[in-house]
Image (cartoon, rainbow, N blue to C red; front, top):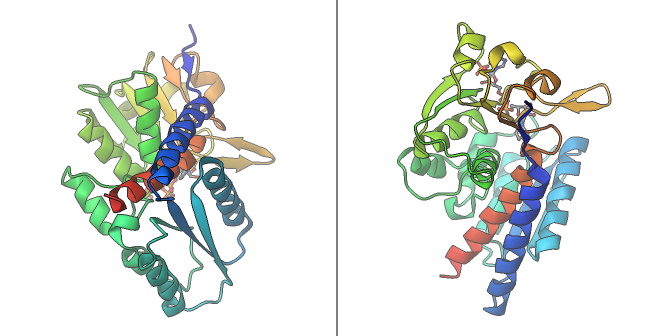
Length: 282
Ligand code: NDP
């Protein structure tokens, strides 16, 4: 029997409407949450992501401050923009759209963002706080996955979770959030031996690989929850890292691509910006 198709669009819409309600309450206290957006260069995918994020902000009443620059800017100029947002009380969160052009140092730029305005959860201080089990902004995509699990009453406690992918943006924070939720977590990567065998141990399997439809049915224990973070363009189609058609019939719940994790990433950015504004207003 086919399992549940997790509806990321519906959960994201609910998160957005909760954020909109709380933004309205904050504005009554004279605080309008603000997001400083920095886009370097003219990469079409990044431009489109930024457009969507700014549209989301407008929809929930968050003000966005848009800074777009040419790709040839210097590191000093980029850090001056970040410093400007760091010092601006109307800006509660800073979104530095990645990837940056190769001549710029993304690590240094991220570290320049004031940790309390790091709504992407990438700053070393926030990652360190997550490792230490302290409150912090969580990276939007893995936190979006946790929100989906909560929305569908899937409690990771005591479960075996396997995360395929160890990137600092997705895989590693995903593993840390699942540990914090009391799962027993295994992290896999390109050097993992017997990947299908390890994946088959998972009650919750998270694929964050970037390889179209790599996770076939032979990687999945019947009844597992399968979360597909991957977004891959194959011709004119978007596909995940999971072979949805063959895995959906054996999973107890599965996220589709598109319409699963993707919408949650954007919704959590709004939630993190609201939280940053709330703590600045305290
Ligand atoms: P990265 O390329 O940074 O990391 C990919 C990870 O997958 C690495 O840890 C890599 O291992 C591992 N990997 C690659 N090939 C294999 C393999 N054959 N077997 C096992 N592990 C493998 O990607 P990201 O983490 O940034 O993104 C992953 C996917 O998620 C992409 O498709 C991306 O587009 C998507 N994404 C989706 C988002 C959303 O909103 N839904 C947001 C962010 C990303 P190793 O470390 O050994 O190289």
